[in-house]
Amino acid sequence: MTQSSLLDALAKLKESRLLSSEVDALLDPFREDAFQLTCSFVSSTRSLGSQPDPAYSDGYTITCKVGAGETECSVLTLSLENAHIKDLRPGDEFELELKVLGFDSLYQRVLFGQVAKDSGFVEPEESEYENAAKLEALRGVLDKRVNQLQEAEDAETDTVRIQTELPLEGVPELVVKQDEPREENLASAELSASKRKKMLQEQKSLDRFDFYMRAMAYMMALFFYGLGGLASLIGVLSLFDPSEPVLMFLLSGPIFLGVGHFMWKALRSKGFRPD
Image 1 (cartoon, helix red, strand yellow):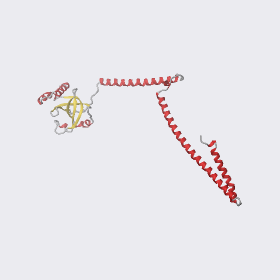
Image 2 (spheres, rainbow, N blue to C red):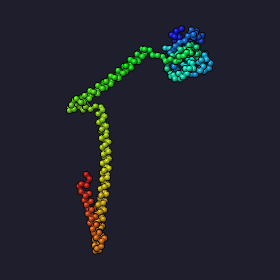
Image 3 (tube, rainbow, N blue to C red):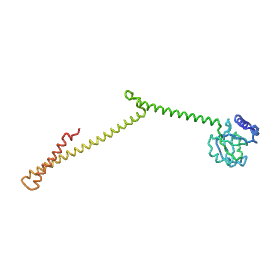
């Protein structure tokens, strides 16, 4: 029997519900042959209980779709394929040489068994047509990308040529300024605003410091005024006592008064007044 006949039989089982005797009669012609079938993985479980062949006892039972009609079937695999089966994911395709073992009436699926050969799972090879189609699609994507890069480079070259060759006088601002310079100008404007704020804060700090210094200077001038006045008063009141302390007060009093007066005049002069 041929593989196409087997696939037709699987499609018939999927489309119509047959009696057990009819199923056996349909599958019996295929039991003596082995078929290289392409399967699409659905799920897998460990093979439990007694099996049609002891070689399948430690293997897996795979649920997969077979043929163009995607008929679900059960496949008993050999234990040497366990590691490969664990790596399969739903939708993965593989090829196995299978033989018909029977029909699972509980799940209404044909039961296949893997043929014991040296070769195990075989990934289906892509046809030359599929490879050519993929190469053509890849070539189209690469050509499109190259064209986009070439257009971008040509546009940048034209922009640079316009900016360098045309005189700036009389040229509208929109022609000269491009998107990137606008972003740079915006960043410069934001930076200038931040710098102005920082300068205002520094100016306030300097004004505050100047105010405190002028206040301290006025206090020092008043201190020297008071000290000089007090020393002069003590010297005048003790004028008739020609001792050294009296002479010291008479000499230091005018000096302190002079220092206080000089500081006061300096603070009130135009050069020391705040703007």
